[in-house]
Length: 99
Image (cartoon, rainbow, N blue to C red; front, top):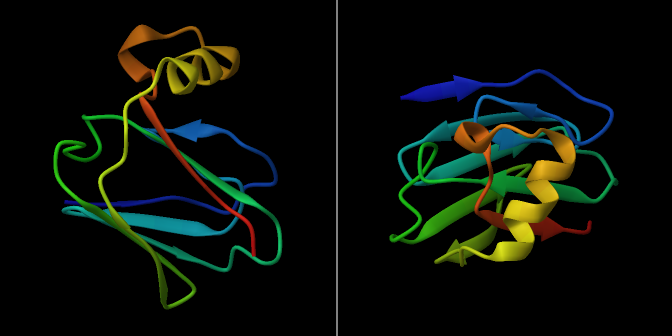
């Protein structure tokens, strides 16, 4: 399954992923982000998007920037609820990058 996202100017959740900027796609356990520019990037993830029990790979503008398991945390859930009070859409894990 591939889910496409449009460019965004701030953290906003579409489907099961927040993208700070750029275009993101998810296929299996891989997230590919293109055109993120120089802004910090934050991904809010949950088990509906990826199997968080398995390793996750993140590619940013063609370069692999993450490969490993992502921990579910209470902090991720709290930050997710600040964006939207929807338990079904709550993120349980966060990955952040600075370029």
